[in-house]
Structures are given as structure tokens and as C-alpha cells.
Amino acid sequence: MIKKRAQQIGVGDTCINEVAKKYVMDALDNNRLSYGKYVHGFEKKFAELHESKYAIMSNSGTSSLQVAIHTLKDLHGWQDGDEVLVPALTFIATSNVVLQNGLKPVFVEIDPITYNIDTSKIEEKITPRTRAIMPVNLFGLSCEIDKVIEIARKHNLKTVEDSCETMFVRHKGKMVGSQTDISCFSTYVAHLLVTGVGGLSVTSNPDYAVAMKSMVNHGRDSVYMNIDDDKGAVRDSKESFFKLIDRRFSFVRMGYSYRVTELEGALGMAQIEQWENILSARQKNAAYLIKGLRAYEDHIQLPSWPEHSEHAFMMLPLVIKKTSPIKRDDLIMHLEEHNVETRYMVPLLNQPYYIKLFGDLEPQYPIAAWVNHNGFYIGCHQGLKQEDMDYMIEVFKDFFDARK
Ligand SMILES: Cc1ncc(COP(=O)(O)O)c(C=O)c1O
Image 1 (cartoon, rainbow, N blue to C red):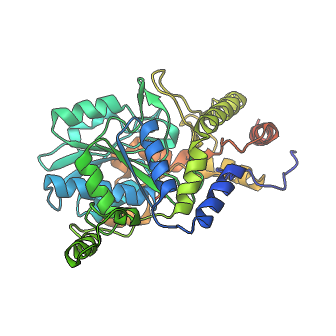
Image 2: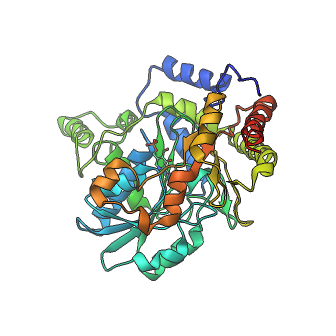
């Protein structure tokens, strides 16, 4: 019997380093919490690293997705009830924002190995009312984005990539988020970069960027985006003064209050400076854990990914194989009892609210349904130490040894 550790091994870790503390203190010392050098710097660097022209930071990945869909709906004249294709396995926010925009999510089955959208099943779901495809890059792995884009072009559809779980990695040599109309990322707790709350909408289309930036900020006219825009304004006459006031208070579209503060920007700036270390530590940890769990491959499907893709490993997804007599919940129980934290692999269609809305869709999506009931993940983040990973592997061994 293995000895239980006192401290839990979490699925994520908040690594607030000294630089992050310095930047946060600097933001506080500057007496400036509204949009300033940190949020701006973080957006700029994030866009650059994702090979795109613009990044707009908001208070969550969900908010970033919300303004992305709303922008496309506004600018392209989509009607209520128009359809958006969404994978049948994803975090609920992906399809919630479709619903919140008065559109209809239409689900597409997933690939049994990568868990991302099965691109061979997209076209059968396209109807005259389809307006967009919303592929998701789950767990740190890009979907087959080139194929998604090819289908979108053929059918004249827009693409919004939900990359909330995946940053800094390439698919066929191209950076995630760089090829779709808009891509969205999350910096919520336990993600690849953590700012507490936060999200980014990334695009290279200036019209989309202007609309999204405005929507995050109440629909304000983008000629006035922050207090720095007052600088240099001429106040030498009543006319010029009112010109300034008017542009500060001009709302040109429906908007939201989705802004962040310089504190999230400061955390983002400090972390993005470390992106290469974060990514390589996760890849190294994932490789170590996968090697250690190979012994149980008859029972567990370990992560595997195509050669043309890199994996960012936001977490380590594991699925009990159909041929195994092992029950997922027994294994999860054993891990949790030994203080190894687990989470389900983002089940969607079996969630009470979705069953209420759409009825029981699981029989139509057997692969997603299998993952809903047999998938879970554990951590492989940069905060793990060698002894943590050895202990995690030992806990698995203990479970399987007891069943020999
Ligand atoms: C795939 C996916 N989409 C959207 C979100 C929403 O991000 P946030 O929690 O920042 O709103 C998440 C968050 O975990 C996610 O994993």
C-alpha cells in the first residue's frame, strides 16, 4: 500500500514569480488600474507570438468568445437562429456564447484520438443557415485547423477558433490562432498563462479588432479607448473642449463591461516573458508521465498527437479504453483519495442544461459520449517536481496492482 501524501497535486498551479510581484507593485505604484502599459504590452506580445496583428484582452476567455461571435454576427448580418458548428466535446462556454448571441449551435462528432473536432464529419452538418465553424483546440493540442479552414472557404463560412486551452504551439508549422478569422484564449486559473481572470480575442482583421475592442468597453467609439487618448487633445476653446468630451462619451454599438485592470495585465506580462519555460516544462512533464503510465496502456488511452502538431499540455487527458474492465470512477476515486487531483474531460452534451435544451444527444455522438463517461485529466504543469510525478505514477501502480 502506498503512503498518501499530505499535499494535493493539483491539475494546475499558480506560479507567481518575483517578476510578477514586481510588475503588480509597479502597476499599483503608478496609481493606474485602467487600461495602460501592462495590458497594452501583454496584448501586443500575445498577438506577436500568435503571429497575428491584434489581441484584445477581456476579463475571460468566454467574454473574448462572446465579442468574437457578436462582432461577426453584426458585421456580416447574421440572423437570429443562424447556425454555428461546434464540436460535441468542449467546455460549455464555447457553445453557450453561440446561444447567448441568439444563434444555434450544431454539434459535430470528435476524433477518438485527439478529442478535437472530426473534420471528416463537418460537411454533413452544413445547411443553408450555417454561418461559421468554431473549432476548439482541447487540452493543449490544435485541431486539424488547415482542414477546417479549407471547408470554411469552400462553403463561405467564418471561423472562430476556441483556443482557450492551447497557446504557443504550431500545427503544420503554423501558430495556433493565426489562421482563423478570430481566435480566443483564456488566462483563467490553471491555464497555460494565468492572470486570475482574463481572455484574449486575436485577429488580423482591423474591422474585427475595432469592433471587439469597442464591445469589451461598452460599445464605446474606438476613437476614445483609454484616458491616454485625452493626451494632446486641444482644450483652447469651448468647441475643442466639447469635441473631446463628445468623443469620450460616444457609444456606437451594443457593448459589454468586459475590461480588465492593469493588475491582470501585469501578471500577463510577467508570465508571457516565461512562455518558453512554461511550455517546455509541461512538455517534459507530460512525456515523463506518459512514459510512466505506458504500463497501463491496455486500460488507458494515453495522449497521442500527429507528427505535424506540437502539444502544449494544459493538462494530461486520459480515457479508459472500451476493452478495459476498469471503471473510470474507481480510478478517479483512488487518485483523489491519494491526493492526486482529477477533472472530467469537459463533458458537454450530458450536462443538465444541455439535456433540457436539446434532449439526449449522446446517442448521436458516441465518441464524445464515451469521453464524457470515461475521460478524465490530471496535471502536468510546470509547478510539478520529479517526486510529484514519481508519486503520481506510483498511485496508478497501486490501483492496478490491487486488480491483478
Ligand atoms: C475550451 C474552453 N473554452 C472556453 C473557456 C472559457 O474560459 P474562461 O473560463 O476564461 O471564461 C475555457 C475555460 O477553461 C475552455 O477550456
